[in-house]
Amino acid sequence: MNLREKYNIPSNSVITIAGTVGVGKSTMTNALSDALGFKTSFEKVDTNPYLDKFYADFERWSFHLQIYFLAERFKEQKRIFEYGGGFIQDRSIYEDTGIFAKMHYEKGTMSEVDYETYTNLFEAMVMTPYFPRPDLLIFLEGSLEDILERIKLRGRPMEQQTPVSYWEEMYSRYENWINNFNTCPVMRININDYDIMSDKQSIEPIIERIGYFINQANKYKRL
Image 1 (tube, rainbow, N blue to C red):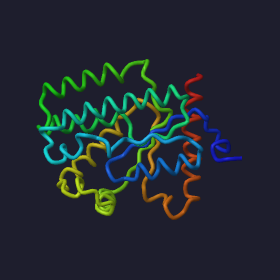
Image 2 (cartoon, one colour):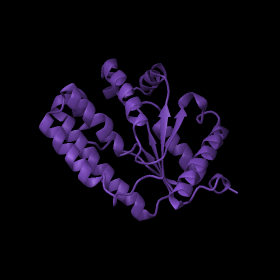
Image 3 (tube, rainbow, N blue to C red):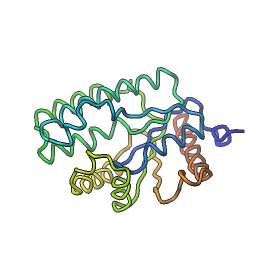
Image 4 (cartoon, helix red, strand yellow):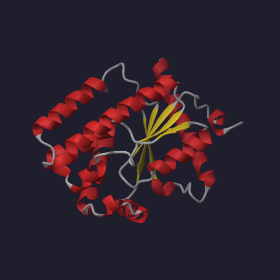
């Protein structure tokens, strides 16, 4: 019996991994995909035409970047559910409006008109009864120091030149966002509670918790 069957996780489940930059979303996505036999869905960083420009000039490119992400994530979310589920998804569509666009508006790097245009579009596309929602959102969390160290270690040039104050701001906003998020069930995991890079067995307790959360949510739906 595989782990998905052992913990009664439906084969059509869609599980989204959320958390701030550098917290290990991609690593967790791959580990859960391998353990459950699910497909993966990653955000397309390398083909994003705005990302480098954005990190060089937030004010000039924040709106363009958010619209690009919204369109790409919307298409990907539809594809996942049209396929029939069975996916682990790296980053949710909800983080874009709840954290990034809001942060740029409040910090003055996105105009009020652009922010209103973006949020209206997001609500019309995503916040409707017809848009499919994940069965579970896994929020990866850890100390700010641990996350800054991970960002430093992976060494992406556009992240290295970003001021530490930006990552501090994002970290705080992620905490506020997840504390108020209720669009789908949420399971929080501290990054210091597992080490799936060097201990493959540490994924099983996480999968056991996933099975519990999804089955509890499904039981609630039937009531």
